[in-house]
Image 1 (cartoon, rainbow, N blue to C red):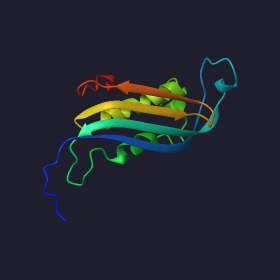
Image 2: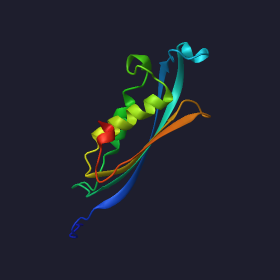
Image 3: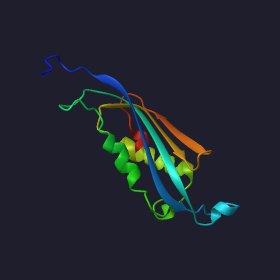
Image 4: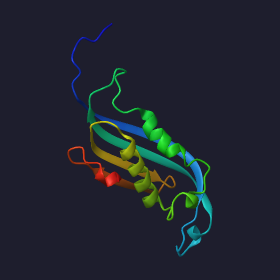
Length: 136
């Protein structure tokens, strides 16, 4: 069946959850977290994008989100980030995703990092008129 209608821009909210295992330590932290320790991290990513679907009907491929997070699996986060706190990790992931989305207009990007089942942080970035300068 062929779609003969002209494609119009859609506003779409994407949600992707990824898990990975990684170790880190928090330099300068006064407590046990200054020692090397590990977590099974859960990353929830949400983006609102406005764009015209491509020939496959997709605006943003889910793999954009997955590739950013999968690089952390079984790594020592201190080798990748100077300060590998949940807050800095969430911001880093958000910047990488924002830089990777090729859609015309990224409206909102939220990244939640779960360090445990009880503790999380969320970084939220609203974008104005396609401005992705927060990602630079």
